[in-house]
Length: 253
Ligand SMILES: C[S@@+](CC[C@H](N)C(=O)[O-])C[C@H]1O[C@@H](n2cnc3c(N)ncnc32)[C@H](O)[C@@H]1O
Image (tube, rainbow, N blue to C red; front, side):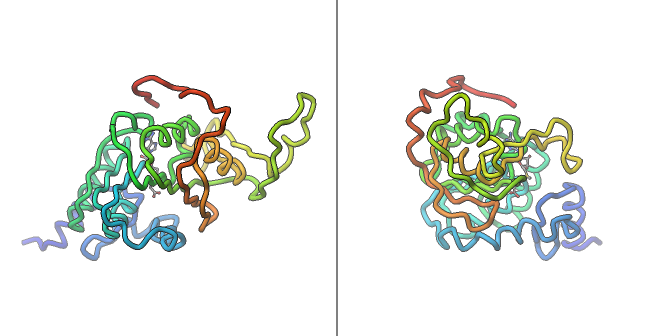
């Protein structure tokens, strides 16, 4: 006769490989993760920046993977937590893990480019570890601002290049070029082929670029508790932003 733990271990193995190391009834889903106990170690670096209680609030976790952050938001009392991801294998993990941990979280197969389909905005939007996996990162931020975010955004992104942030003028004359070569000027580094053997890594902003893209999409950065994590609130878009750039009903990657 197999024990409950044998059955659980079998299911975890069957649903793998896992990117999130979750603890399900004492069994870790990714104990040998190349980043250590991930994303728990990352979470510990900014957990204090989010209200301890989220009672009554709605949360959207974009690119939720196996639902680590969605689970943490539910544990803080969020009334509604929705996790979306475009990969059904991760969503199967997320549903299984939430069920084992007895957390009431909804998961839907949806791309960030399809946010308009939700017809819903959220008090808190998490956008963790997804930006650099997108071919159209600024479009994703625009769509989050236009269709999903009601108040707060928490974004994490890998960054490469200088951590410096240069003062950027409102305007430069046509002949001015030297600022483009400053290490602290906003830069998005394009990966045509592979980075870290991963063909889904497309763009790595430097720190100045992450901040500039967030501002440009209509977010005010309130806090930056970890170099990769930005706590934001929705704000006015820049005056020259203009009308929505992509009025189509749905966009696909
Ligand atoms: C590096 S993992 C980050 C997972 C989790 N958010 C975290 O921070 O630990 C990137 C996740 O984004 C998802 N993803 C990538 N492109 C996406 C898209 N266009 N729409 C929705 N999810 C996407 C992947 O399937 C994957 O689960």
